Length: 177
Length: 424
Picture 1 (cartoon, rainbow over the protein chains, first blue to last red):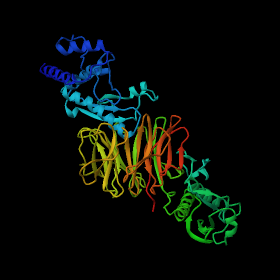
Picture 2 (cartoon, rainbow over the protein chains, first blue to last red):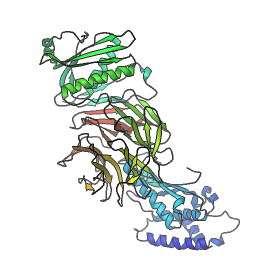
Picture 3 (cartoon, each protein chain N blue to C red):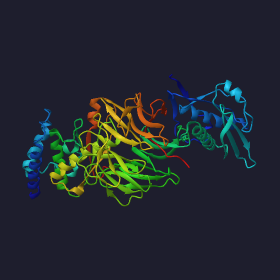
């Protein structure tokens, strides 16, 4: 309970810290955000017959936000867009609730330009999510931010649509890497 | 004058070649004043003569510095008297003659002589011991071509040097090493995960590179003679962009262990890590100047990526590139006077050369997705990666922009080329 309080406070700090960013795009992951908001306010009210929403099993539950492991970024941008903040917060909760769990964040970049410079750009994206997690109470030794640069594209076409899919972070947990 | 010719380099028995696919080279364009030269067939074993002279001719031709004159079908021994008037009539300025002598132990001795037709006298020659193994024949031929090149152009030849590059086929990455003409490819490392940024040690005995086999970038050093390799940098976060110091004892690397991509120095055995510079943004792609005084690197400290340099012993950072908003991958030339790099112009990426004294720049290529330029050790050619028809190929351009070559492997992507040093 005490931990949840700290987490709620940190979440508020995190959201406040992000408020200086430009307005969010219109698209909203509404349903997920609602469930997230209610459980954030009163974690004690989660019904006992349901799966622990921030337990490790939720990582594999397609209905849980924790099964979502990708954070996408705009061109030449390294800030977490509002639509991905609930996802980052959910993962932070799991990590705080399970301090022995470790996470690898793999940043990626689109293919244009130098491989090594793109590796550094992917690193900036991975570190953006890592910083948010630390703000939300995750411990430094739980998270490693690395970059795969342009080496692991999810989409290999040469279109903006494709490149947008490659400007992303992938979140992996212990046992998945 | 524009010429286009395709040289099939599969000249010898494929017995010595492993599974690695052969690079084929296509040459377009040539130097302004090409030296007319005739390489006569060598006297002795016909097959060995063909194996040697075809490689010598292909080397000289590919350089763009020579115009090969038909020598006729007759073999001319190294010691034979050369009819200079006859060669002048055929418009050759130089003639090469040679002999292949079979030794009792089964080996061969090849002697050659280079003649200056104008001076009507021999100006050079050597002899080499070799077996009939294709790799040994190639080595002997490249050394002969190097001597001819140096005598006639005044600069050292690079036909005996090697190149390293990465071949990506479906689900597989191979770090390969081949002769400078793309022949005789050997696989130093095969992996299911990406390999990038290979870098030759100054003595040519080792390659440093970045491998993703641990699901993150880690810097390795690989001893080519023994096949033994070790981790040079594996800190928390990403480890990348190795660059050898000219003494071969240290590597500049990029680490993110303290947050952000930053420059560090590490001993080649992985010990003694020291931070080189501190910036708020990205610092990456370090490369030493040949005299070891400077480290050139890419940084976004001013917004977009530009090239900067700092004294290798530490000190104030200077900005090197100012034109355009995307200049990356600095590669100082072997004489330290110029720098090749990749500049973005709109949506296209070109290998560009900067005179470091005057800051004048020249775009060298008309390809549009250039990456990873690397100088030949004599500074004459720049090898780089680009894309043709959606496939990664290697290309080379002379530093004056006149000679252009393309190297490709069937059904695979080739990338991350790096030209090795002179061999002793």
